[in-house]
Length: 128
Image (cartoon, rainbow, N blue to C red; front, side, top):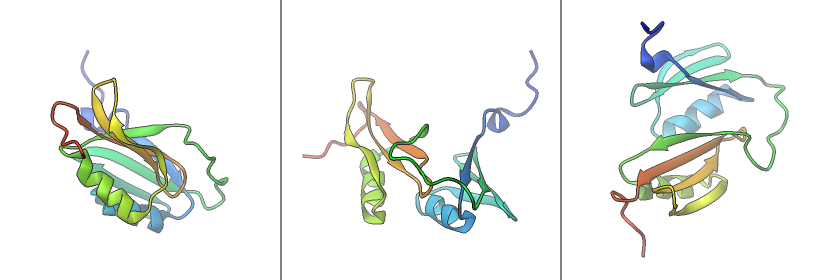
């Protein structure tokens, strides 16, 4: 079967935000690249993979726990733990070694969407 679109355009995560500018800055501080910004819409990328954000100012407040999360694999999860700690991002699941083979943690963006940063255990630098 011939793909309909390039693999980087297939199964793109699209999230909603109350304040597009705030969300763009949040994701850029974490290392996402801003590709395109329009009125009420932005396209960002992580290593060529796309993330769309649509602004919906009347979005209901986030719940205490995200309905979904996006996994982002990084070479050293400790570096990202330090970034999110400095940014004072709400933590859903603190950093730790998991039985599924990752050292990871989960936080939420300003609108309650979950972000899981992880490194394979064999590659992870463990904290004392």
